[in-house]
Length: 208
Image (tube, rainbow, N blue to C red):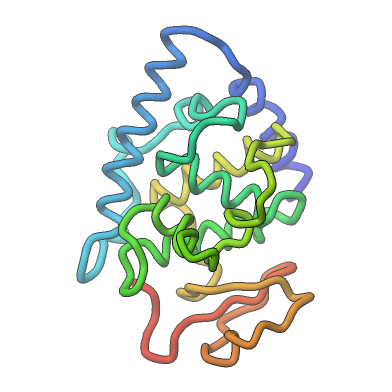
């Protein structure tokens, strides 16, 4: 399964290179516009529509790879914020781990106590140096280092925003690496172990 993903993403990486063309810019703008709409729908209250995005509204593979092709763009759109989080939290791990990180971000989106924008979810806590996602506050460069892994992360982000990604986590809002035992985990219900991560949700209900 992993070899299949790597082979697929090697092909996707060819689309991700810096090709300065009007067509690529158009695909980038289309992807970002679609992502903004899909993000709004995912954050709807009281409960978002779980139906996958119609083909006309869904982000395509070529469109998502046109966004942030070099992995150095500002963190100001849903695709870049989600893909960088998947990349930095789970790069080098199994596909299931990467997908589960995407699940947590999407589960948080618009949920009580969390922002209604993907970038807001990813950056939450940065103003007090208590980031929800540690990579955002670690003081290191956020630029991508492995193109193939980032192409894979963007593809997973695309599926998550399109609502084509099953929730592996059982509605989890939190997770941590299995090599650590944070005190906060005692406050929540563990939903599942996936790869190198353990996932949790509140006692008072599932993520929507």
